[in-house]
Image (cartoon, rainbow, N blue to C red):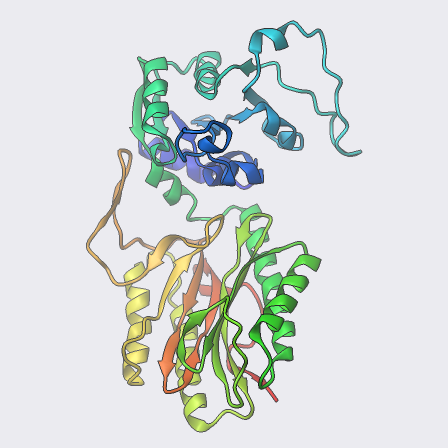
Length: 415
């Protein structure tokens, strides 16, 4: 289960919310484990010409007692066969016609699982199905937090009309706050993603040599990710200290010092890491700069303890750069999970608020045990060189614990 259920219950009680409705694929997956590629890529105009570019409807409902329901299109229901969520409400078919069917043949999807039986809760539209979730669970007058940012205004108004006695508030930000602290399953997936990406990157970069196209290295990285069941998210590089790229057919120079930023997606969870590639023996200036990056990241990791403010961690990183007279660069940090960047974001305090109709907090969030945070120290251009060091840490009472064993003390030297 991806859902950090206890944390969700605590936040719902704190915000006086009886029910939460997720409407985006990422938060539906968080509440139910349901994921299918079409829910991310299909838009309404793709099946109904002239319609909007909004996603096709998809909902998950979580009650304050921890009960979860899924509202899904009939063509996607089979993908819920192995889910722990059994309350499925299906839309997109002729509900009256389906109701006349005496039985459906169960489908054995795996020897170890129960046979999949199609849901009898079938409705014509998604909003009709969602309304029946509330009727069946006697929630018609509940206090509801809804992910309004993942919905069209028309759908939101239809839900309000169907639940006239409910108190409905936007909870789009509340979902992000709940997802900050990772469940055991999330931590397992994030650690696996980081390990897969790191192994693939280090092996692929052994191919680096003068005049070799970086696209050959990226192709090797893709292939190794696939062998371990992961998909490419990114593999970015710099070219002689100029910017960052992924697509150009750049060929490495004789004495390249290149920023490398790489990541993958494993079971829908993101990894994100970075290192510095050096062709040939690094000179003293290169070693000095990289040593600063290592100090920046590893010393900041010691601060990743519950209660530390996000901006204070970034301030420490910035001070390390300033002490080494590295200017106009931006060391920082961020969470990651089902998105490549989750809250908290470790940047200077901008004075803004993180809020919706359920929560209102300073953007400078305190760290919590169980967060997985990236610390990254990029230097995009000093002369013809660019540098990067990025690692993921688990927040613990004694400081950040790296989730892989990669050697951070030295750049990745080839040749």
